[in-house]
Image 1 (cartoon, rainbow, N blue to C red):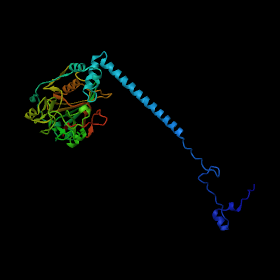
Image 2 (image 1 turned 180 degrees about the vertical axis):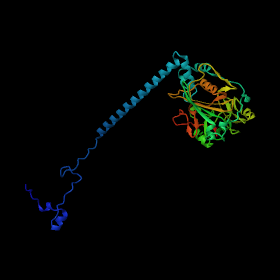
Image 3 (image 1 turned 180 degrees about the horizontal axis):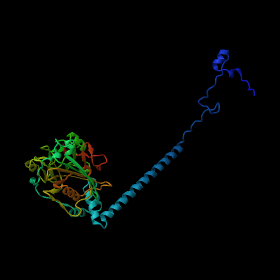
Length: 393
């Protein structure tokens, strides 16, 4: 079928039209307002009237108010429910459960007030009296520590691998209520007390364990002794108790309320309530203070009731051959509620400790080894700032 003829202007492109003298048709572009009828502009948005604006704002306030009321109600229900649940534990039929929870909270920095919501001061004192460690008032017998000559496999010149690794063994521990680590340092001369600074001051915060280790180029370490911690908000800048670092006494508040634990010039671990003058007489080179003593001269501490609550723990001890035992246990976690003092005694005795002492625990409990933290800890912000740590060169 014959196609209909087109006009001349439709048969040629623009160039062809120029060549023939024809003018190519020019297509008109649609304006920005294409799609709208010609001659009509886009409708303008009407401004909200004052009445409509007030109505909208009132609606927003109503919605926000309902959300806040809902959240407040949920919080109240949770608080009341928690209070009722704790009341069942504290005032329930099981005295052991109530005592254990009380002792656990009393050992924490932030939860000390909770038992007093359910008990009178006299009742709390009675709970502490029937659940306590019996203080070991023995003087450390240094003759019980007999240093062994290194075995052939322990000799750095013949051992395979770096001497630092051969001299340190780390065991992972699991008990009914705890998960922890035992570090065994065969050479006690490598263990010393690192400090954030020799002149402690509230004006300067302590250091986290990894930073303390890096300061001394240490390969391993655990947190150390007591420090000023008002209402659990201390900055870890001031140590408390008899504190020596590498043979020098620090300006720590040298109270004898805490048990001193440290090494003398012969690398023997000394445990006891020594004054600063007594520590100097015994030639203490490195020490911190906390307590209680767990084992003295091979005699384990005794306890009544539950002894203590379940919490994160740190402890240090020494075997008869001089090897140092450094223990850290995680706590306040679903898979590791923590260890009691009785647990620490049992672990130290099992590992052959002749002398051992409890150190600062809770959110301070940490173990560092080869550039890494071995335990999880409990502080959300990470390792807590502390003034002292037992480190390993």
